[in-house]
Length: 409
Image (tube, rainbow, N blue to C red; front, side, top):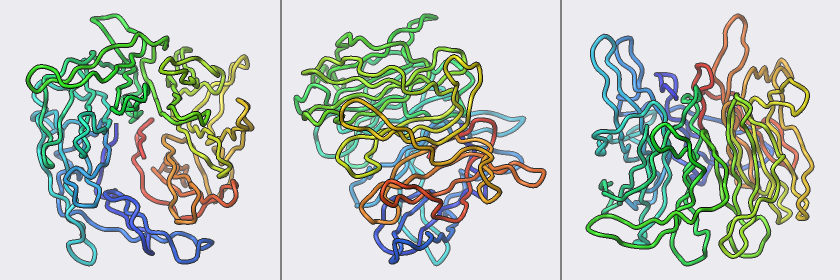
């Protein structure tokens, strides 16, 4: 879970061409070889700022253009604390209203119905499940998964029946992005993958829910296709066409320190998921995702965090890319290790995500985690630029959440 303090303000990368908005607004520099420069913005809304008497503890955050105005808004789920007073679980849509001066960015908070929901851990997944052209959202909380319909920029809670959801470990500090949307059966609508499924005190296998259209009233119909998928109490999932055959394949992992961690790929055989590779990594704390790092047309995998080493009884902390060879094989490349250099004194990695930050046509990496300073540990993020599949630090250090395994990018 992330706590956003006064130092975690809006950041803009100087140049042209907006990529993302909220805590980071990315612009590519004119010279692709130049270091990315950053300018901080304060936010007009201060409800996310930490104070001695209050905090907003964030379980999950995810961007989308909710109101269709061409810029990204941010949905945040968590709980607001007044110390020695009260606690309120909240979902808030922060509408992006753009610059409000030379050093200020305007965000307007819009409350979303969170009655009866609890966010010790959670997840947010955007997807246009009803095919009306705007992003809807599934919000996972403790023992609940709730579907919200987007009505002209307003998120309306529906009565859709979905499985119970629970991330059952001490990884509530990690924003895992486990629930995911994908049209796995190629029928033109989005289906829903749900790890961390529970029934009472029992953990159930990951469920793949087929979208079967409108139900009664405001409800939507989803049907479990009983896919042969494992239990993933702290799952991370992503979809992409691994085989290049026109359907979406699955990257599924379980992030755990209890010996049940895994990272697997599943190929999609006409709507049936088939295990392809089960030995990719053992992630104790961290995350993973697809991406074509070397622009060769086949998919690579990035993962980062604390890893267990199979059969060795030890571990390592690393950001690693597995370069795919289109034949099911992978070649590992380490972007950065902990304690690698005094210039990049990484102690831990908590999040890694792809984006083309310098607008040169290939994906770069944003890495977040903790740095070891002089008698102090700092939360830090750093952009690693991609030059022909080789990654090197390409930005000044940026602020990031700190506190155990806090992560999210």
